Every structure is written in C-alpha cells, then in structure tokens.
Length: 97
Image (tube, rainbow, N blue to C red; front, top):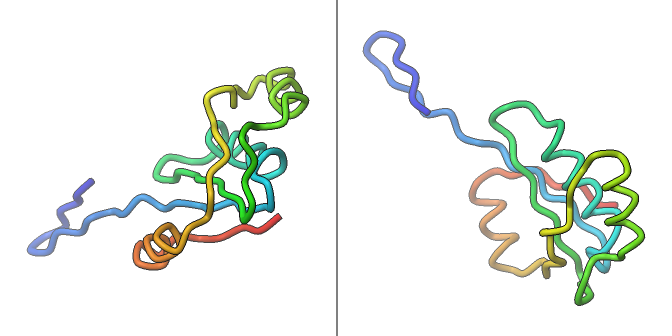
C-alpha cells in the first residue's frame, strides 16, 4: 500500500509475527489462529517449530473450533535458517512459547 504525502511516497510494509514452539502442534498453532482472527489490518502471522510433528494435535483443532477459530488447514512447519533469515530481513517479530 502506498501513501502519498506531498513529494514523498511511503510504502506501508505488512508486519508479520512468528510464533514458535517445539512441535508446532499446539500452542504456536493456537497463537497463529487467534492472531489471524483478531489482528489489526496490516499484520499477518506464521507459526513454526524446532522439531515439528506431522500434524496438529486434534484436541487443539477441536478446542479452537469450539471458540470459533478454524485452524484445520494449518500444518506444522519447521523453523529453518531460510525462514529466520527472511524474518530478519523483513524485520518480523518473534514470539516463543
């Protein structure tokens, strides 16, 4: 999005929050889901894990569904050096759980 205020133009960069836990199957997925639902415009979220498992804990998916947050399509992701480098380059914020 560009804003023009006189002779200069400013690009508003989307801010991304990275939620990290070990398996990326519970807490960080919940945090990503809540953040996606309630974050103000201009923000996005990603979750990742240091040792991700193959799927999100079904109890977590059910609990989130009960409070109106759909995380069924989310998948556990590995926090890679590429992701960390990209986050640092884009000045992303980190939240560890």
